Amino acid sequence: MSHWYSKELGDGVSAFLPSQQIHEAFDPFFAASGCSIEMAVFSHYDNENNVVTAYFSPNASVLAKLFDAVPCDKPKKVESFGLLAGDARCLKLFYPSSQ
Image 1: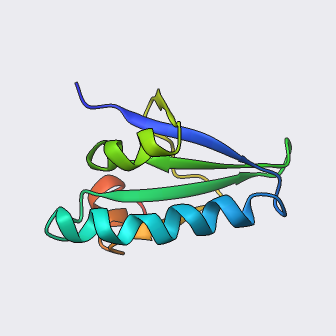
Image 2 (image 1 turned 30 degrees about the vertical axis):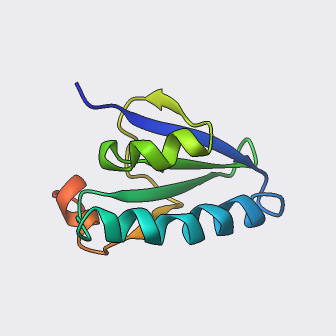
Image 3 (image 1 turned 135 degrees about the horizontal axis):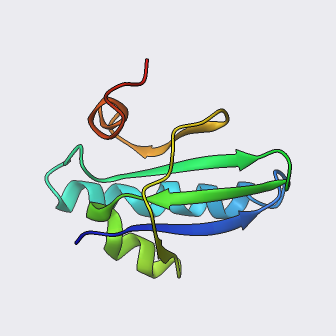
């Protein structure tokens, strides 16, 4: 079974730098994958707990491990959830019923 991975990045302000680092590190892995739309990193800002979490798709597992992300269930697409790095088409791939 392929796992998703998650990593808490901090509150809205402190999450900026790790988010940027993930985004910058993503490109070489994405290129090496042949630009697979199955390789993506999403982020979610939990307003109630004031924390940003990065979610790495199963095909981004090597990158996830570099950032000490831990296995998790596939995240739900909720408010304040978006693509951090990857091909925009992956949203439709992973969340086909979303608009």
